[in-house]
Image (cartoon, rainbow, N blue to C red; front, top):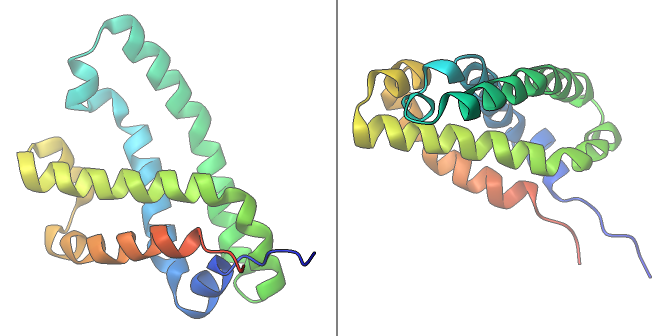
Amino acid sequence: MSEKIWIGAIFLKDEGGYEILLKSLKHYRKRLRTIANSPELKDSAAMFASVLNQQAMKTVPKIDEVIKKIQNSMDDIQTVKSLSDEIPFFEKALRCYESDIHKAQDTGHEYFVKLVGDMVEAKNDLEVIKNAINKIKEYSE
């Protein structure tokens, strides 16, 4: 039986997928660092907010590690393929960015608008994010 090959590696390396991935990871890091200011967290119980904030701070170093892995692997497709273990993490970052763009658009809440930044660019990123989520999960048959 032949081994499945991660097609998502081609998307990351040759189709420029790493750009939206890095952007999403940086957004995810920014979101976690400012989570205490999130309107959703402010509405939750104080004890829950504390636990969520602690978990967020534990995740930030993982984001930095994954960003470095991506940046250091773009020269070699074999190295890019080793990133397949990070697919769930990539997906989480992409979905976070996507969700925050929608929240900024739909609610206009200052927190989300500031977090997302350039709303025109972010709106254009929505289709790219959708494509990236599908592409990073692709494997050969």
